[in-house]
Image (cartoon, rainbow, N blue to C red; front, side, top):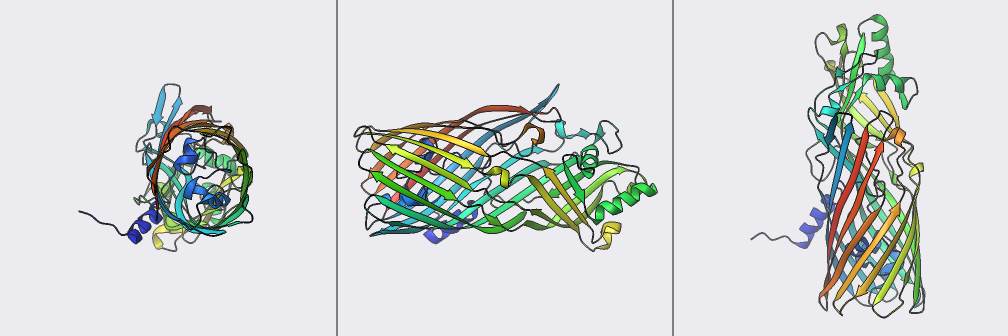
Length: 474
């Protein structure tokens, strides 16, 4: 029989919490913790258990005095992404992502403190090798239907948090809270960019290209060594289920409050500051060029090894406010509004590749290629509502919904980052297994949203997600 100590489980949760969480509200999950998840993602003004640390840390003040709790959770996300142009379709094989969480909270009088680790969100797709929609493109000089690499096409972005919350009850009815967070973010990317798009970006259309490597490439074109470029390929990826190849670290901070107006009404709010994360970096990256001309006579594609940095990747500032109404003894109605400042952090996808000084890199050795792809995400407002009915002293039934706009403009919608889902419909339950333990579960359905980008590619994305949490009072 296999045994795992609590420290061992903590390590597993710490590593696993950075597993990719598929985009739901942009890159945010639609709810954190099974109770909040079942109640439409509401979380500002009622007891969400240990998951308060990711929602509103002030709701930790609703714990019983002189109590401590351990929480264990697992979340499953099951996206369904399909792509289509007339006569051709493809689907992403990235249809199952699992993320555990682990937490410990304690209340000592007016102070509540603890530690928690979980996955915050991300994006991911898996189109595999020789995908029909990624097999051909247009060259830099305008040749139609030139072959692309035929290699694996995939993306994976994950963000995790290790959080240290502290809440303080100012009065019996008012609590303030804060959390200092340590973040890590990682990314895998295997992407072909056809020559036509690369050329457009060198002219400032849809992004920008710069750096010494572009100058060398331009010189090769001018001298005739390169007569055309079919595609440029980015490749930095690994087989690690917990962390992507390019990794960055940083910090975050959030504050919140709750105030109870008697037994009928509680209000609350929180503000999550924009993160401060270092560039996501790996020295195990490959940049490849394929085309025609003498430069490709010995090898096509020409592959250059080096270091890549994904620059300015941050998690946005978020403001939320909500209320919880108790119209009857067994009923609770919760409602939140949340504003996510995507426009400040998702303007561009910015990378900087620096080639190694190895002889195998030839004329590109030591040179740099800077690429920015426009994204121009819009801010997002999410409205959530949830209803709980306590059917018995042990069983609570829950349902809810959330409604949001799609933050990704159609013009810049990329099939590797299809974060276009909007609304969610949720249900779940909570059950007290004993006086000191409880379990909660939730199921969420995100109806399919379909958008068409500037290349005429129709992208559809829907989801079916679930979560389970177990809490043990010590």
